[in-house]
Length: 230
Image 1 (cartoon, helix red, strand yellow):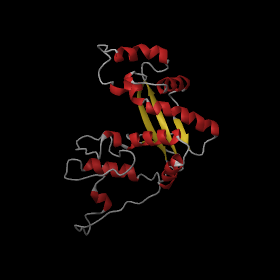
Image 2: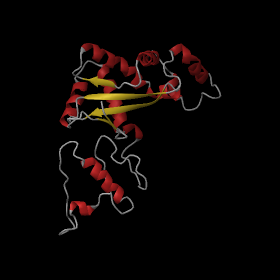
Image 3: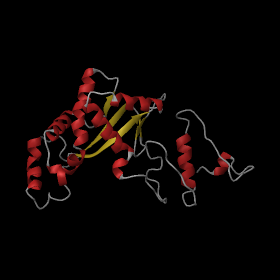
Image 4: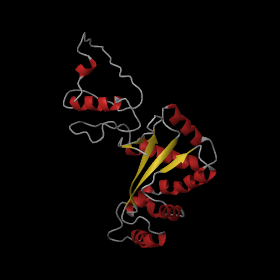
């Protein structure tokens, strides 16, 4: 476990002392800071995660405070921004990509699809569940709300998922080819229908991935900070 003594904060300590941890990508800064937070989790210490992903995911024995509503979490903001940007012919998506590049990430977003029991189903396969919910079916009428007002986007989302291998990430890149960008636009339907796809048990989760600009081409999931290798 890392301690403050490792940073020599007890040598000539002052009340206003500040320690700055500097190092290249992949040198272990994040790992050390997480270890430091774990060492002092039962003390009166505040640890702040100011990254797009949660540095302290799954850490026990801490009081967690999140800023804003759940729909304002970084992954949800990215999904809405990408869906809006790809749906119109403007420069919004390129602006988002430029921001990612400035922050040290590749100018693209990845999406991890976790399949559920009905993954690969057609609209006709699931239409009875939607109609049952709309008619007030006993087991289908809880928590659907306005999502029952489905339109042509749900069939488009299901068609995309039938063609997609869930073991592969869906990457949306501003510099991609016209064909790849066209596929990305088709994926917008999945982003917009995420909630109803989860309730239909087509998917369990739709994670957002970032690609670091480092020698290892590291891929990080925003809300869990999992590391994936190519």
